[in-house]
Length: 227
Image 1: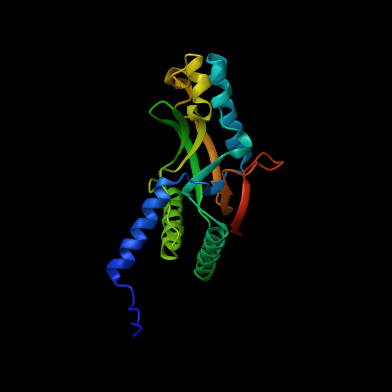
Image 2: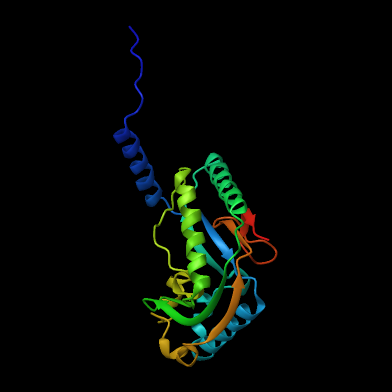
C-alpha cells in the first residue's frame, strides 16, 4: 500500500529553515538592501575627509569609496537563483504595501562624527535622535518582513553608517605598500564633523556582482520608493 505522506512536523520545518540559513551564511552575499545617499552636502563633506586623508597618506587612494556609491547597508543577502530574486522582490513589494496602508512617513537622519572598525574601515556615523530611531524601526521592519516571507540575511549584524574608506577594497596592494591601517591622526581634526541630513527616498535591492551603472552607482535590481 502507498503510505500517505504526513505533513512535515514543526521540528522538521525548523530544522530545514535552520539548514537553509546556515547554507546562506556559508555562501558569499551577492545582493544588499541599501538606502542611497543623494544629498550633495553629505557627498561634499565625505569628499573633503577623503582629500584630507589622501594629503597625508596618498597610498590610501585605492581604499577610498566612490562618492557616487555612498549608501547605508540595511542587510546583505545570498540570492542563489532567479526564483530567490523574484521572492525578495515580492516580499519588498508586500512590505511597501503595508507601509502605504499605515501612512508611513520616511525618516530623516543626520550624518555626523567619524568612527572606525578596527582602523580598517572609516565611516561617518548617524546622529542619535528621533530620525535614527525611526530609521532603525524601518530597517527592523523590512528585515523582519522579509524573514517572515522566507528571505534571511547572510549576516545578522546591523550598524547604520556611511563608509568613507575601507582597506579591504585593495588589501593586497596596501599591504605591499606598507599600509596596515587607516591612521586616526589623518582625520583627527574632523572627528566630530557634521556631514548633513538625508531623507530616506527609497529602499533598494542592489547587486554586488553586476557592473555599476553609468551614474557610478550600483545596479539596482528592485526599489520601493517613498514619496
